[in-house]
Picture 1: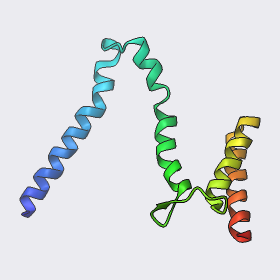
Picture 2 (picture 1 turned 135 degrees about the vertical axis):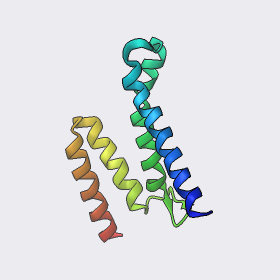
Picture 3 (picture 1 turned 90 degrees about the horizontal axis):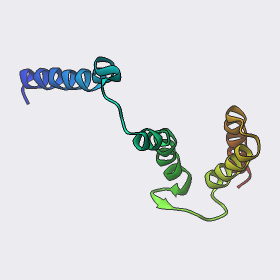
Picture 4 (picture 1 turned 180 degrees about the vertical axis):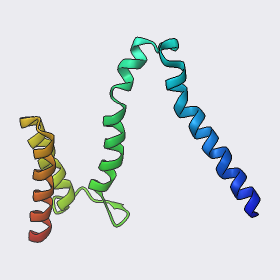
Length: 107
């Protein structure tokens, strides 16, 4: 690609990003999503986070490792149990990282 083509590509991608992201502000309440879709979208952040975190917990060296010696998986399970019992997000992060550190040093 030439320098000109690169700058044209950057400009078009910038324009596409601005148009798609500003459409929510420009249209405002003119577009009303169906109630079922609004309800489904409430789960999108949690689903995205699970899609990011879950592979990191179960993949070791490019292969799935569901063995009890996987410190990431055990720390993740411990963090989930802590969260289900307390509903405290910061505590969950601290407990999960502490468990991971301890298990990694022990195993």
